[in-house]
Amino acid sequence: MKMKISINKLYSGLFLLLILILSASCSDWNDIEAVDIDPQHAKDQNPELWARYMESLRIYKQERTHYITYGSFENGTEQSKNEGAYLRSVPDSLDIVTLANSENITAYDREDIPSLQEKSTRVLYLVDYAKKMTELADAAALSTWLDKAVATATELKLDGFAFNGLPSYGGTDAEQAARKEAARLIVSKLSAFGKTLVFEGDPAFVDAADLSKLDYVVLNTTDIENAVNLKLHVVNILETYALSKEKLLLVAKIGSKLTDEDLNKLDAVTEMTNRVISLGPLGGLAIYALGDDYYQAKMNYQTSRMAIQTMNPSK
Image 1: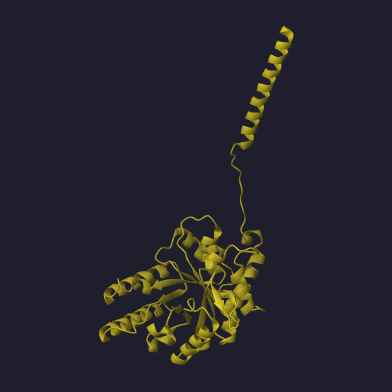
Image 2: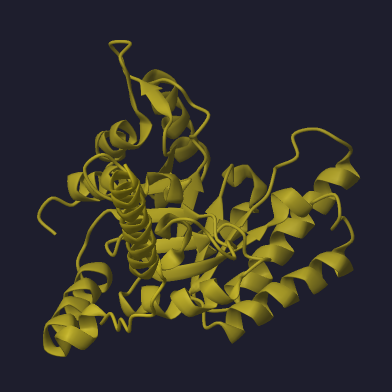
């Protein structure tokens, strides 16, 4: 009887010892250990191949006739959970990327801007006058604000400006005159920068004499929900203003829908791409909320890439 009890105690002791050993081993396996990882950028892995790719992008964007693809990007993210929030991740084939949050350019943005420009993507500063109109009613205040924007664009070596503003269809003569004066001041300051100049919105805001100074007009078509109204709107704009078709870009927002003539609700970016060709041909497509397209079932920026390929299939 005493022998049996001793054996049981021995087994119990060995079992506890085994548990302690296994626990210690598991703890060692789970310890965080620093590992040196030095990921190489593509241009460091094969500089010659990278240089050839950069040259092909330059030729496509600067020398070949093609439909323009313009992206509005919500920059200004300090830290994010995914790459879709950073400029460095936008599709290489975009012609223009506008910083939608230009008054909050972060260190991450500053680091990424040159990488886009290396790929011949023009990076523009958005002068969001539509958002600031109430604060900048005084011409002196507006001038100071514009000077600050120009100074930032100069410091960062940006490729130009996009700007917006709301036309005045009502109000007193004095209010309408002030709105026109503001528009002329904006164009005067930004066009003097000597690079790309884009207007986003209703071209009625811009003085007729200044329309020729614009490289592109991004027509705000995000609120148009069906193809019939879209066609009427585009025809009206082209007939009313002295704009060439090549300067006009239609806008679609990632995730929105456009109803065609057969009452089918289709992806707005994809369908608007087709309208760029059929209603003109026009200058190209502007994609808003570009970062929302980063994660797709098939690949990153699936919708945007397909739109670019549809407009420029052989490029």
